[in-house]
Length: 295
Length: 317
Image 1 (cartoon, rainbow over the protein chains, first blue to last red):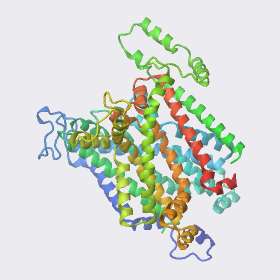
Image 2 (image 1 turned 180 degrees about the horizontal axis):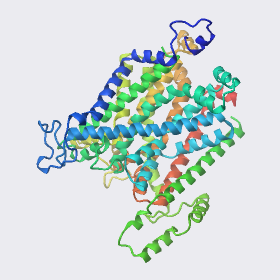
Image 3 (image 1 turned 30 degrees about the vertical axis):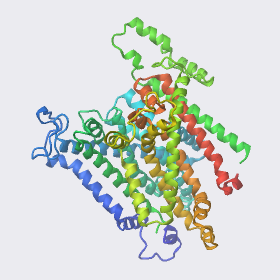
């Protein structure tokens, strides 16, 4: 029990007392699977972002004389059904898939924190209205609504980000609401009020920072969810549209050739799998690290 | 559990349903582009108008909404654009198939996830725990359609053990054994992610409960392993698990779109894909309302189960 309370109560600050963020970072460093996941994710991000700067090849150069070619000096991972270079498409597809993940989570964070935060902070009728809205969104099959929205509004990166983000904020909103309900009763919040801080300042400076751990954990898991959802939507033809590459649509395209050229499905499938597992493990590690009661 | 509490919950459920209906109605009608029936470029202006008239699309939006709301309140969801038949009838023919698949998957989820989650939660860090955790991590991370296709290639094509799709072999309708053989692959694919998720909840919930005094007491007085696990631990760990099961439901009923599409299973999931891609307004509205109703009803049921599972909830009212 060396939590925040101990620091407040103790008359002399202990030299070993660290800020919660510092303490969490230290705990995270001692969690081998989280550290490994972080390293893997950095590698994957570097592969997608920096890879195309080093490995220059056209992702859309079609060459029907070299369909389904095996690895060669020109095409280290071979070519696909249109004779396009697989490696460069994996890199650029990675940019798209990761972008879908990051931006969709950003949208879902904004909505989740806004709705959960306002709901928990102001309580009363605002809380009732916002929570019924959240319940309603939870009762709608999210995947179906995503599919609908994409057929109606067209499929593209922006639409995907918005649709995935707008159908995945509800869990976070509930968590944030719970935390805000608890935190607004804390001594520090009361003290800030007594000093004349405005409601908005109290919410922004004193309550919201307490919710950061929940947000971060939720975000890492959310990225996994978004990447998987993009691949599922690709399967139904409303994901990122060819010729642009994403891991999801590369995997979808590869399913027709799963017998003759299984590697076409293996590469994007493995990248999705590794990325999603790594984000989930990192999320678990962060959860353990930010839990003041954890071992 | 008082009557007023029950009424309040039912009232909330109703509000949620109405909201779902209104939101979907406006999202669908305000979206650009009409139903796919009107997308045919060969249609003349007269034919187009006739179709719009027949489908009731030439009214202003408020008029359409009032009509729709009035009909829906009386339980009439209108006729499907694609099938020409009443939406309710179409859903009712698909619903049993989805319930068979969703029910089997739910059962499979509980039968696999609960004992495994309990066992790994009681021995965190053991080899068994690490293996189940790794396997469930992979199951959560695999794209559903990829997993499904992999199983089809292995079990249906390479080893020829199970059928690749459909609900029955032609001429074998009503044969339970045949249905079960068709059910195995889709049920495994549909429950894989749920199993992994429920397993995680069971594990963490069990971990919290095993350190409680009453478990130590039970152990000390010599309660058998089985009774300890299922009577003392699982029952106390049940509430968060049950809540998590409730959250899996929309996915099982309405979200089986991918699984049903891969395996050619004639259920609601595939129907929803057809409705969305065909822009069939009444069918879209019908499916959304229907799934929402099922989810809301199930969550209400779970709420009502809490006091039975945990008498402390009963005391608080």
